[in-house]
Length: 168
Image (cartoon, rainbow, N blue to C red; front, side, top):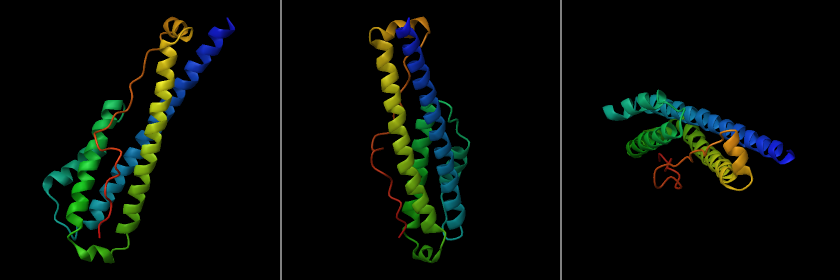
């Protein structure tokens, strides 16, 4: 009986940790979308962005981040939009004079690192949870209380490489 209580409590702790980490990733990704939007707003007087870039920023801010798949799609779009902004901005030396551009770039870069750490933590917690659903005797407890395997967060290839955030 003690094993059942202990296993159940471990499952609950892991499930809550997974949900908490997932929500932290959502907050960080929303913050990144806002910062990329601020970067576009800050540099828009110097740059002429393609319509698709501006539409991408709007879509990014409104994406559903409630599922692992939604996070993956939002991350891919954010990287694409940010890459376009950086590529265009590199051609404008006048941006060097703008005091707000560098801190925004640094903040986005810091946020990228934070998202990466949280993604690692999330997937680590999911792995532990999923292993418990398969190993004896915790798989019996998982079956009784209907704990099912969780999905990992998987992002586009090349995700391990931080996007280039240098404007100049």
